Image (tube, rainbow, N blue to C red; front, side, top):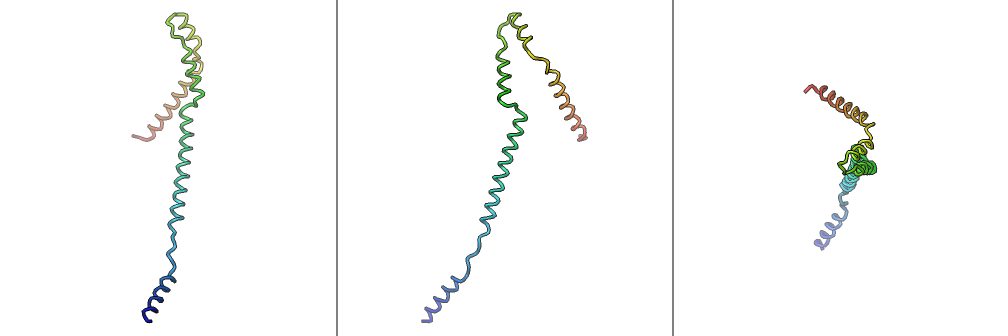
Length: 114
């Protein structure tokens, strides 16, 4: 009978001890959500920067169309027609923009005192 009491006592003592609470699940879940949000933000930021660096497809198609419209002929009249149809009015503006960007980069390098 004592043996049965010992068994019942040990069984009831084990059942009274509460199982340990798991707090790692919410922490891991929160970390996963934060990582996914960071990756999504990086993706959208990267897309925005890429669109600024590379022109959209529509403007590239216009440039390709202009290049393809140039004649393959080596006749003087065809060459003159190609030259007259070429828009060189914005060339100076583009060169000034490039020069300003290069000057700004050089100024930044001079500020570093290498």
